[in-house]
Image (cartoon, rainbow, N blue to C red; front, side, top):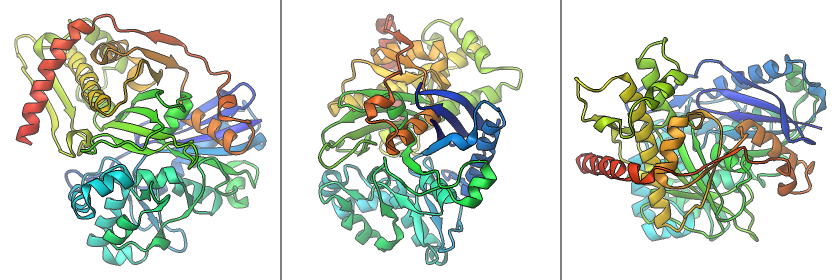
Length: 494
């Protein structure tokens, strides 16, 4: 039996067709090949067109079908992973009213901060597990305050995955996990937050029907099935944010298990059975994909906005003749510590782990007679690894102490240089898996459709590829401490 997974990323759409018996991808496809645009009309703003996502989803599915490696009519269930915290609004005809305000947009920071103070910090943290900060609810409030005529036309408010599911099925649903990532769910009441909806003046009818993550969220319409060469009536049986989904794809489902990614943004994501929160909301707690009232499974998430996007910016700056492989190999020729060159990798909007400050990217200690491209390549990846360490220390303050971190061999974790810096900066071993967000979404759909009898069965054939353990942590530690002093000085000035 075949399963279709769709991963709605910031850079592109990726789809995978997974054989439920082997739990392996038959084929994967990405569209477009070049990275999708992020619109930044003003400094700190970040938007993308939901209709662009939908067009790219269709093209990615058709591209996978064109491989000829499977029969599209044998696909039995669809799962969706998506970039978290984005705001999508549609009218009664399910027409998009404006571009999505996406995860790295910073315009609603002060709106969220004022809500945190007005609702009450202790009340927000104990019931929402987070400050409203710069999440979906605050972004919707920005639209209400600044685009009132458009706001009056809103029929439903969605996350990006809810939107793609709507386009496939014509039905609009959401989940506790999705509402919690928008800071709209009251964990004590087990309902849509009265505090948030009342404070911002949101009508509760704007929010879709709540269903479990693993359940039927609608069935593929006849028209869309014909367009995509699929069978009408195939159910969408799983929707989750990209980081909870990445954790699922790495079989990170039990308390104490931890996953990491280093794509456009960088994330460490650990599972807890406690309704925990950071008093400064620097790390955030959401309902995990397997959250239930009777067995609470929370995802504790550390996010760094500027990881892979900084590596890409550096590559683009150096011209088309330099590949990521070139950057990695050249950087490895430079000694650990990049001969004093330090880079703060925070140039992609307000950083939650830095109290929603916009710090920017900073290059420190450049010596024009010493430092080369190779030094920059190494210092960029070391700076990203040190940002992970800084955030992990915050997670440790909140009781998350991983003995191993699971990752997929993708994005920056394809770099031996970055992996070495990450493992030694954090002093935590990394366990590699053949992991992919779209394949994880496909397996999630198999769980939601009952094709697998349990979450454990869905991953019974998934085995680790490699374990990388720390070996030079004592060398990295003083370099990290030097980097940390530069960051803390910058935070004072921000």
